Length: 323
Image (cartoon, rainbow, N blue to C red; front, top):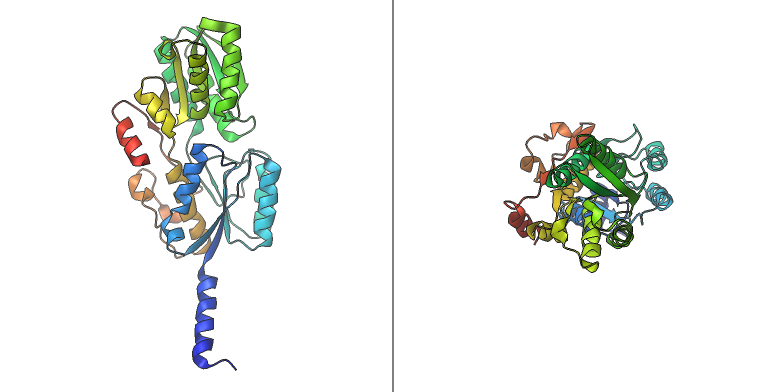
């Protein structure tokens, strides 16, 4: 027979378990540094480290069907909320619909999905990033010459929107020719292979490389070096501010725009908790870090994390923060 004290202890334990909020973190893939930084930041959120939130990470493996299967698992297991960075802007909508039908709030982060069923979206303006990186390349080229464009995975929102930004900047430089434009799927190795082929085809005619993320810009740099060419003869830019890119900016080899994945992930966790626990107040420091992005009770449809262009003046501080 259970004593009163044991019963109270058991009830207390059950209440504690019940109070824990189960959140699923669904990044599109974990092979590259940026999504690793995004995921690590979510795992370091104060609500997670304090035990208020039980966070489970699902590696989407760059596959929309894998992500949908993971949503079905989270629904079956009774998760309270999901933070979603989809690989595909269209296919991801099915997963969101499934969660919505099961009464589970979904907060988008980093990459977008064409669904009006998201609780909120916490990310950055990829059109602006695409414009800024392309402009950095074109300014260095003096708006003349020929470029190649290395795209992200076709159909992902960042590829689509950064492409829009690239086109906007290119339209301002009508004398610039785009020699090649192809996806390397955010991959350094794929970009290196592409760039090796393009250097064989076009040689020194290539003056600029617009890579829609840093990993691909770094792959292009490796190809240029392997061809025995001087990296400084090229204008190269990427997006994300991954560690190797910060070092490459410091070395004068490329330009980069820092995407604050930590702010995106932690902001999305705060919003997801709020959707489950109405009296919740945000625990992440990112809301004081970005006063132009107010919390507003955690109910805004969209939170826009600002970009930070990487410069010679700020690169050392950004590298120090990465340690």
